Length: 244
Image (cartoon, rainbow, N blue to C red; front, top):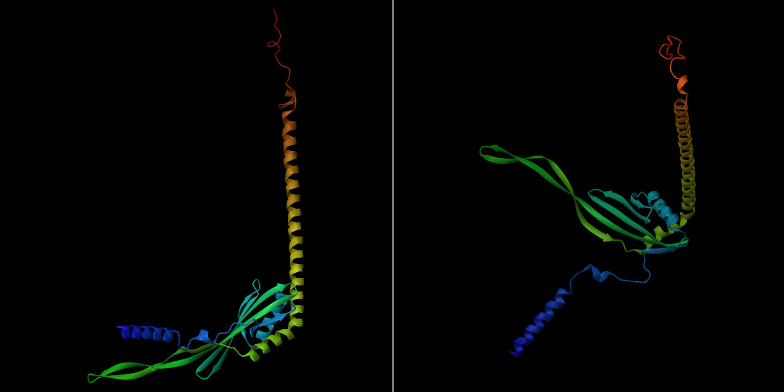
């Protein structure tokens, strides 16, 4: 009985150890204070946002997402090699530390798609035998690889390019702010002009109402003898003078 219990315990421990084994991704993950996916710059998030976008656009990436409010960018680039389609996907997130300091976080993935081609056929009945006849082909993309790029040199190259484009980004951000300011000034002028015109129209309408009210008041205050078609003609006075 004692041997049976020992064997059972060994089996349970073996199963637990086996369940904790295997080729799992989390075993290759390391948490560090400083990693290859971040870089600190002494610039504001709006400037680094513009510099990051410039880097990817100049490198042939398609910027599929640009969230200026949260300072986030997603860029993609597709490379076709015969039947193999390679997709690079980069995600940028900028975290401001202050008005003049920000952290740029960058992660990139590489995804591979292979073209799977199938032959389409149809059967033709001949002599009670179905003969398959090719009618064409159909192709579908099958994903066979997806991984996060973990090479420090890859990220250093992007971070260095962001640094080089900061001056250009500063000029673009300054120009955009000037244009936005001019638009706001123009909108304020139009608003004030519309307000002045509306006020003027109200004054005109008020004066018209006052004039109308004054005319009605003048008509109602005329003497009773002046109303009608004119003075009455003298006629038979018998109706007003009694003769004995």
